[in-house]
Length: 200
Image (tube, rainbow, N blue to C red; front, side, top):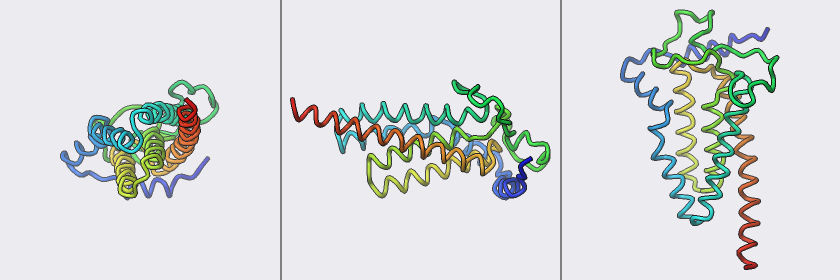
């Protein structure tokens, strides 16, 4: 059986009771609505740099990257479309459900959902988004902003006792792979589309 002592120790060092205001803030960070302006900014920046044609192509590749990241992460928790792909894999409990940490973990009642946390879908999806959008937009300030947003979202998952640090690291790995794969496809299709328009 794998020894998770170091992972548990790092989690406990990062998880704490920040009070009602912090709880609400981390729930918002971990949700979707707060990030809608960021998604709009990404689409606007792609449009500004490359026009509507690339926005459509970018959105298609982005949706594919996020869906793939979520599905791959779900394999290890036995959820989603690929949940039966590795049926023998033993899913790992979220920190809030881990017996060894009972009484040591802080989490808002609203955060309770789903028993298993490895691999983190949140980490996989936000890292896939960061990988693809930062490469396409190619602005240093934007890349740093996306890194900060990624770290904030990942930390919210620890604060809410949804994931251990290793869950997030593994999720980030999934996100990098899926993001890079769809970036390759985006650039390949963009070159072919551009060549087609030059011929016509």
